[in-house]
Length: 418
Ligand code: UD1
Image (cartoon, rainbow, N blue to C red; front, side, top):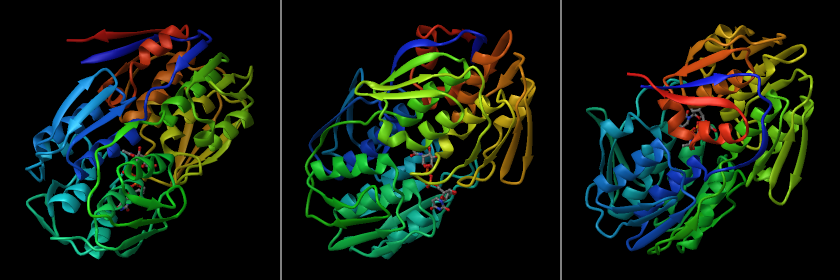
């Protein structure tokens, strides 16, 4: 198992290139199931989650060829409709094949994702929506099965805005008979990216990025040739890396429009943030000001940036309060940050972070994807050496993180542990 070893204290500086967005590439890859022919996706990040979804597409019968950040997928011969447990258990986003498979083949059998480290994360809203579109849903032996000769349009209200649910139903509705309206839909930029790609395939999706998305079903779709948007969470993580080390980093390719809440909170913490055509430049403050943060669906503060901001606020000049409103149980990084000498208390949905003068390097363990990023960030600022183990979590969602940080001047290396 690999670990990352960081000697903290270096101020980061220079330019770093953001990769393609994992959370956009995953649904886009699943959307290729909607049409036969040769799809081509570029700016696809090379990550473990992407490998998992490509493996899933192959199991379903698609032909996949990767060349660097470009992936060609031929979905002519999609024959199987089953997403097996072994894959779904390693990556929840595998449920995104449900909508496309039912829409194109009339049948899907997908393992239930089961528990997840950051909360229960059910898929009830995905299933309720498919049922409203005429699918028969059944559960057996840990699998959810959906069948419909032809889905039909419906008006679907989400009790809570769900990113995956909005994406799944948006894809399913592209080939349904009639019009589907998704109300209280999630507004995340990745949903806009998916809608843009679907429209390029010949779908009729409007309103993506607002809380009402309308999809007029069409008879058939064409393969897509599409470039995945930049990863706003990776970009945000580098922005915090600049801030926590009092560095000066140009995050090239970062799309400021997608990062408004993050930029606003970084400025409030005292960082200088400049936007230009190439990306976002962050100069860290000499002293970090404490913040009040409440995570919420886009355009609110992203839950996927909560852990990274917490790492930064452990060194703030005062008390910060972070409320996690999207997922329950998403404070697992707290115990590990405490091992580095931070002062954090959890009170229900809130974490109260009393800033300390100095973090002290220690061995810590990653618990989930964004939690691992927060430990790396803390390690960059901590005194002495921090060793982050279980970094397979990190490899699910950050492309060559240690290489990129090294190029910015961090003292960081990956070590193979037997
Ligand atoms: C996606 C992102 C993840 C991010 C999250 C919230 C991907 C691959 N992952 O996850 O990185 O943290 O959005 O921004 O894009 N819910 C239900 N029933 C459902 C579906 C969701 O109750 O059927 C609840 C969840 O438990 C959670 C909330 O809705 O409390 C939001 O979850 P959702 O937006 O669906 O997250 P994901 O799509 O899984």
